[in-house]
Amino acid sequence: MKEKLLISACLLGFRCKYDGGSNSLPADKVAALRARYDLIPVCPETAGGLPIPRAPSERRDGRVISREGNDVTAEYEQGARIARTLAERFDCCKALLKERSPSCGAGEIYDGTFSHTRVPGDGVAAEALRRAGLFLFGESELEKLI
Image (cartoon, rainbow, N blue to C red):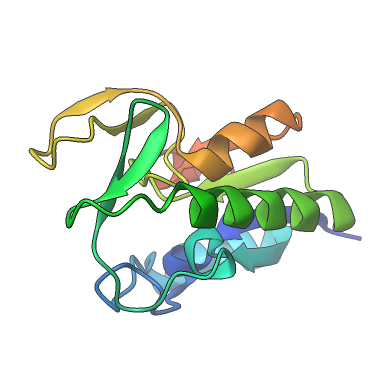
């Protein structure tokens, strides 16, 4: 039986990115992941009720604020709860998450000014998954999982 890996759905080609696109990994990398893991896709942002497309958002002062100034923290928190529930239900010990995302970013996110300035920190779902004990990886660390 293969290990389960929670993975940001956009990395698998799901068109759930804020602008309606995806952040697809190369097909050979996805095949290598599938050979080793059962992949459990999740998009915490859409799981939390946000539409596609949607305004980009960033974390600021413990909240998640859209570029338009709307507080979307509740939706991000709901998506984080769903991601954590999926990880628990499927016994995932690891997660491969979209880097710098206000939801999935692990270790580094944007600073909330929409200036592309990066700061140390976790997205809302990454934070919840880390608290649940999962080992988190961004797509630049993919080779560590293969």
